[in-house]
Amino acid sequence: MRPIRGLLVGMGIIAGLSISTAITAQSEWVCPEGFEGQELRVLNWSTYIAEDTISNFEDACDVDVDYDLFANNEDLLEILRDGEEWDIVVPSDYMVAIMIEEGLLQPLNLDLIPNFANVSETFVNPPFDPGNVYSVPYQWGTISVGYNQTIIDEPITTWQQVWDYDGPIAWLDDQRSMLSLALLVLGYDPNTDSEAEINAAADFLIDHSNNLIAIAQDDGQALLAAGYVDMVIEYSGDIFQLNADCDCEDYAYTIPDEGAVVWTDNMAIPASAPNPELAHVFIDYVLDPQVSADISNFVAYGSPNAAAIEQGLIDEELLNNPGVYPFPSVTQRLFFIEQTPDLFPLYDAAWQRVVDAVGT
Image (cartoon, rainbow, N blue to C red; front, top):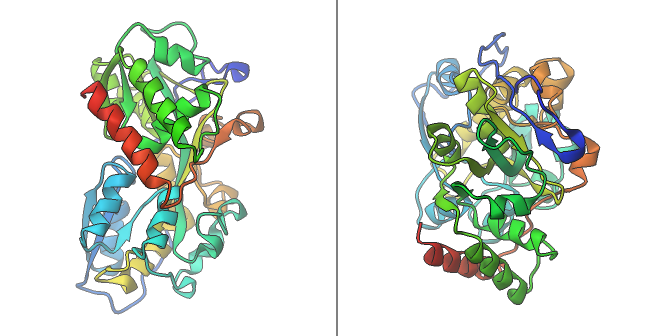
């Protein structure tokens, strides 16, 4: 991402950088023959792909891509439950496990994805999808605190500072992450299966919502940039992108002392995909080292593509930024969201109670 300024490693403060959005090299990936004139339907998160990723794929394969966005994992789950037909979706780790359990994803044929060999061993055979039977990694990062450091000049080092801040803030519309962060502050397991503890986390969020302006659907960074809020709970790359957009260093991203959420988003093919053959081709394309690097350099998230890193294709400012690739002292404080279908109703009900109570 951007050059590190104001990084206080001991306190986990990660200042803004400036992202290079230029594509510096052309991918050598070649599309297999026989897909000319076909259509691929891709459903992804917002601000989560390079500017020419889709158009380059369309040109390479002579196909059309219907590219659209979803707001959060739970919305994506409902979209697939409702039977909407998409060829590629990008669920987070815990949601992959739920979708597998519900039969919403189809097994991948890794023989059709030779670039899977480029994936770092860290992201191969994940616990939520042993053997990568249903998914392959797309990007990874953290969920923590972004803030305008021209307004907030005291480093944010604890989550309690966020809850107690005397000014407008926005939360992320991600039920598991928000409840898990509250559980963390309360001293509970962020992945607890205790209904009492989950409800205590909901109560904590309700009791600490006086400074809440909005529960943002993956666009809290826009509220921060517009000055509606001083602080947001958001995805790491979204905050780093702000400094690139404004060509400034006004915004900081921090991982508080207690820790934060780390996640992996993954490409998967729904069971109802109308064109799974072309979907496999697209996954292979995204895992090309240059294509993968172009995406990571543009969106400012961590790349799971070892070949892209080894070939020096990742922007050095990003690669050396502990906000993107955290130091071991920070990673030991990060936690993954773990979820099984039987836990989903507990967290869903608790979050709905929070949303009803805070009224945003």
